[in-house]
Amino acid sequence: MEEIRNLNASRRQFLKKSMAVASLAISAPSIIPASALGRDGATAPSERITLGIVGIGPRCRYVLKGMLTHSDVQCVAIADVQRSRRDEGKKQVDTHYGNDDCQLYRDFREVLDRKDIDAVLIATGDRWHATASMLAADAGKDVYSEKPCGITIDLCKQISETFERTGRVFQAGTQRRSVANFQQAVDLAHRGKLGKLHTLHATVYIPEIKTQWLPGEPTPDPDVCDWNMWLGPAPWRPYNSAYVNGRWRGYYDFDSGARLLDWGAHTIDLCQWANKADDTMPISFEANDNNVTAMYENGVELIVHFLETPFGQRPGWVQELGTCPVRFVGDEGSVEVGDSGGIVVKPASNEAELAKLPKKESGLDVEAHSRNFLDCIKSRELTAANHHVMRRSHIACHAAALSWMLGRKLTVDPKKEEFVGDAEANSLQKRSARDWANV
Image (cartoon, helix red, strand yellow):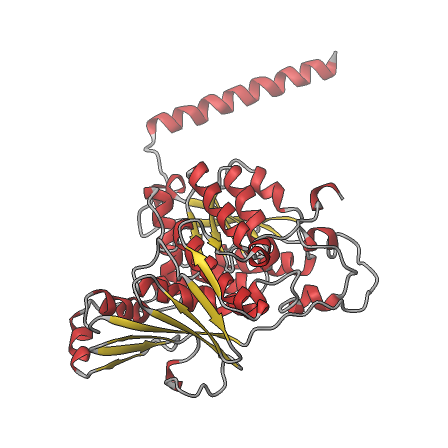
């Protein structure tokens, strides 16, 4: 009985205190933090885009650094199959926000299940990009996917069709479409300042294909590295720590188009854009030891040059323009541009044309591209590197790679997106996928 009396007394005290607090709340003005209202440069929570991460290696952390500069996005979750990478990612995000709120997951499907997440940044290895992007779209998420977006022609088609069906926003990580000097080069071509275009020059790494397996090592605990999830749709092979530390590149089972898409997803894409060919692709591809030559229906030639190293000397190119250089040539002039932010035009009169263009800050090369993605999430418009753009430029890259792999000229029907009279080339449009979800 004594315990009940004490309990009743405690309740009465609680009610008295509650009434007093309520009275103060009515008489005193409400004080709401300016950040909650979006004042003082802050973005109100209701206006923020919540972001989840799928795969957070070095490239992702670089892209995320650019994304976090925007006040209207908040990263709330990270999924990665490696514990060390999850921890590194959480440190980056929590340090940025000054809290400990970012949640970690081993299985990215748990991120997709969260109803409070609007969009995902997918930056796994190539083998996962397409599958993760399509699962995300079907889960109602908008997607920024690192390139290459699909390791086969068929997967690139499937991505495009999935985003068309779901109506979700898609941005391929071909960020040079949002970088000022590349935009200016394309603008000169589109405005006829080079005359009639006749030749486009793109650059890629020297293609390579590795099919051997690295020696097997003991498979780690799944919490340290979930090997099944790391492999994903790729064929099974024994665990080797080199794979998960970034040395998967060049292996056919994990890579895209004999590494040709590492740069080609950018440089061939820029040539497509300059030629106003975002809705089509070249109709023929012919490889030799030094390049792939492709031809468009409008008579413009595309030459894809193999470069031995990304940072070494590149004969025939303006060295100070940096990596991923492209050159557009017309009958009245040319323009060459690369990652340094510079631009070289001929004739000199075109320098005056560049001076007329609005001044733009290049900045971190993903800042503007992620800004475009976030703006399109709000407007529901197509992004600069949307699924239609990705589909055609990626298929063109894959066709160039297949010409090199097969050692012969390939003819393409750009409407059907098929190789003409070449059953073997058409059979290489797709690969078998491992049933990773039921292992």
